[in-house]
Image 1 (cartoon, rainbow, N blue to C red):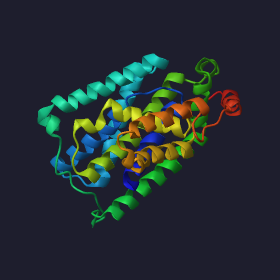
Image 2 (image 1 turned 90 degrees about the vertical axis):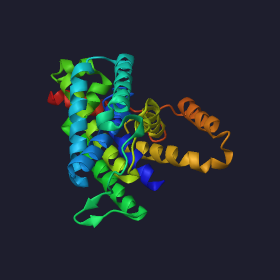
Image 3 (image 1 turned 30 degrees about the vertical axis):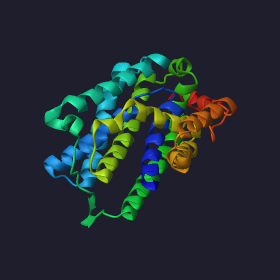
Amino acid sequence: MLIMAGIYMVLAMSLNLITGITGQLSLGHAAFYGIGAYTSALLSIRLGFGFLITALLGGIFTAIIASILGAATLKLQGAYLAIVTLGFSEIVRIILLNWMSLTRGPMGITGIPRPKILNYQINSSSDYYYLILIIVVVTYISMNRIIDSRLGRAFRAIKEDDLAAQSMGINVLRYKIMAFTISAFYAGIAGSFYAHYVTYIDPQSFTFGESIQILSMVVLGGLGSMQGVMLGASILVFAPELMRSLAQYRMIIYGGILSIMMIVRPEGILGSRKGKKREVDTVVTEGA
């Protein structure tokens, strides 16, 4: 469970950059997760690349796909963008399901090799735990560096008011594409780790429901809060297991908790009601 919590923390932090920091609603994050997983698995099985190379290439290929999608769609706003990303997620799932010669369709890809780093074979649960812990820490630190940089302040300015940001010289479309691309890179890394952890993947692991679960983690923890989305990911990974004894009621309880949270604290557990006006003013003054 700790390993899966780590995977979802990386996914939640990456989605937070798009939705929590830049203010763009994406419902297709599972597609990036799946692209990274399939890319890494195929490179590993068919070309014999090691884990570090497949994970990096999985992230880069996912980022390229995201940049193309972002260039075509990020002029859209709100519900329209959400619908497009939802459609993209379904297109990816259908491709994975029907491109039999490449993905083996519903049979999935089996026998994905376990990671091997500098001649050290990752086999035990503790090995996987420490590996995903390193990935989570690297993701957290690098995301915070991005958010605290001039680039991150531009993202927040776009979230607060993209017209005002554009009027002060911020290239809104370019920054949105950058947020989309960076976010997808980390989702691809998470997908790569997942593929080598479970050693078997199929299209059912990357459905629309998975995107909703990741989005729920971000909303529950607190939009824009890195610590919050990590907490949200932990809660929604462990809660179903803790409620196993109430199996017939746990989905009702799960939905009830989310509903109460949206009523009582819509900004999330660690989210803030306060805006980022100071940061917006700063970036506008700098004319990023």
